[in-house]
Image 1 (cartoon, one colour):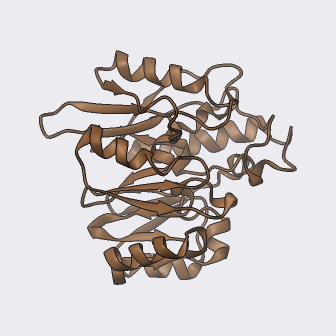
Image 2 (image 1 turned 45 degrees about the vertical axis):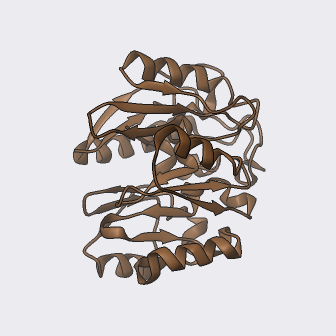
Length: 269
């Protein structure tokens, strides 16, 4: 059974702008609705997987996006490594100590990248179903983070360059699925990265439309044969159904105001 970390949106709001989705949304979050949407997502994930919670902290509104806490690696001997994020923006940097404390207290081996390396966790580093790590860079994380992660964890990893600030984390434009498949938004990536994806995944890629990308369809949670996302077009649902995958739509529109959706609100641990 998969296991996820989530954080209640007790202090969630848009009170600064660090990505294009936040622009025009300062002070516009309906907090009661955000709480209800989060609880709905929590309920769905908890039905399909195990969920742990970290206590939210006043003054850290984006702590709810636990995907950015760091990167978890499960080892064959049963141990788990946690590479702590090093956030680009000062507004999010205090989150790192909170997440480090949580994982340290739960028996994870906590690791740090070099002090000058920017890396925003599972927002920019995703394992596919074959345990290959895909690392995004160009907007939030540094490209050399990949080499440090490979050195620390001794894993197979591939680099992907993001070029559009609207899709600022890899998990906003790329989602691994079962059986070596992925969904992705082509225009979020540099040409050489598109070529890499085509070379590795070939016909196992489902390229999503801009409509689906803007609805954060790639910011999805894959659990068994279910793909949990904010919204999907009929075309995308059909394409996924062809591979035996069921789309579960869950409204997280209040969190889109801050540039995050379903995947951002969870961290697989």
